[in-house]
Image (cartoon, rainbow, N blue to C red):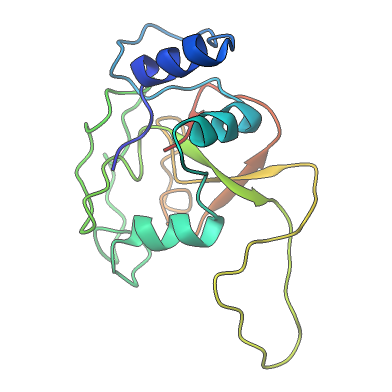
Amino acid sequence: KQEVTWAQYRRFAQESRRAVPRAAFAVSDQHAVHMVSWDDARAYCEWAGGRLPTDTEWEYAARGGTTTAYWWGAKYESGRVTGGKTAEVGSHAANAFGLFDVTGNVAEWVHDYYGTVGTIGTEIQTDPVGPDTGTYHVIKGSSWAHGTVTELRLSYRDYNNSSRDDVGFR
């Protein structure tokens, strides 16, 4: 329902003997963790008995049953991002599925590699998982640093292969 917090990540790091990343700015234990790599996020999810969602799963959950560009409706609304740094999880309203901070806090790592996969023709793909290999992983959602009309769209995809001060996971 919420992004992983610093407190949750510290517990994982202690139990798995991993390093805790250095926060990019002052945060409380309840702020969304950031500065974690995709490998760190994957390891946390495995430790917690889960996995990172695929790009498709993330977008479905983030939409909360809607088919509009934004989970709250069809029109862009300014003020949907924290601004300046991360916030405590749960600071942004929940969507219809009860997921908090879908946009505006930290963008989120998902399972998929970044790239294009598809077929030409009429074949319909259900829940595609993206390429099998790649250099970069997909990042979904807008963050405190990215809140334009384009970046707040739930279909927006970013990519990276290292940690950033505006990327976490759930």
